[in-house]
Image (tube, rainbow, N blue to C red; front, side, top):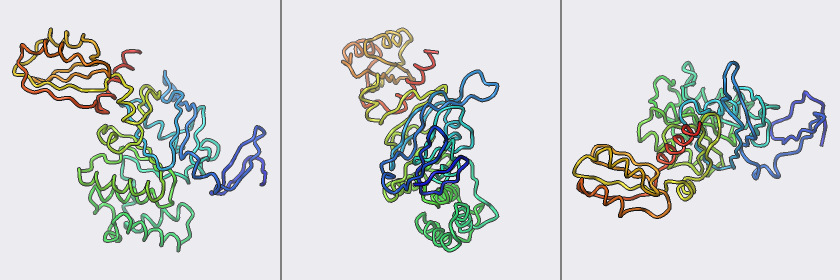
Length: 349
């Protein structure tokens, strides 16, 4: 063990602990690294100059190695600011962010070395070939020329880009360009992958291929993934956990199946009628016990129900005059949970 006074340069591959007198003690990472969270935020706050309210207000959560977590929220919820704080692009006001045990606030260079980032926009170097984009990113992260060539060849094979190695990014389809961005983000084998709207503007097939590659990464490399998205169905399908933010605060954190069991809206009842329901019937449906929300779209009524006793007899009595054609039930979707959580938050302000 060695000590040094701040400022200090700590080699990648070492874990640091900071004492009160700002001395740094370094210990090899190898022993407990696999048990350390890939990402940890503790009471993180950020207020932009001139803003009346914080963009991020006391956010705390952890992400384990190999875990895929979706960051959800309406526009202006604080998702992009949270991603910016993690990547060190935006400075933190108060709180702590640790990436694989490295402090993003005190040692941003070391923290950035432990993460890979893919943003919404295409940031590929259009003057370089696909192979050169990968090679140069490896060099940027400190690999030797030989190691960078080897790693670039591995990535071309892993991501199915070998036949495009000498092509420049403008000639790639949207799906292949996104694949190259993901390969580039993984060039230095980070323990954390940050994705901002990763499948935005991709067709269904490209989305499927993208998530197959993410699944392979988490299995083979134990890579943790945090991705911000507006696609709730995508989050429900691919996430181990979801984090829902609104007005800068984390208002919900849990696995999709846990949220369904505990949330006030566990089931959805859909009724197709012969006639359109009038407003008075809708009001009476909404007032029934265990009805969280009732919406009408033409001749279709959708009733979000609490996990308690379902008032089927009362609902049937109310809609019978309009003629029942079809009734179906299912578990509430993440979209329905999300909408009700956000609606509750807005009404409480």
